[in-house]
Length: 108
Image (cartoon, rainbow, N blue to C red):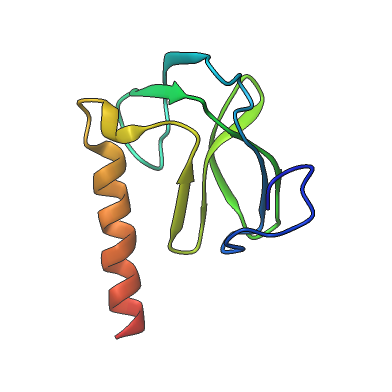
């Protein structure tokens, strides 16, 4: 669900998101530790990034930045406010691949 809107878009995750929360034109980078994803710090690139305003009780918050949720997981679904595909690290891709593989094993 998008914050301040009356309709649900995909409705796959129990979250409310504010689009372009950091500003329509503001892009920036950061580096943080996300232990569930990698033992090393992960570079993050934010472009017209949203943030999560509300996360339901079944949501596993993986990381925050400046007290804002920037990545989370609900079962086999993963959401990020940043673009992991724009960095040289494969940590998020590997984490996502493991989620998919584990989901396939559970559902087979």
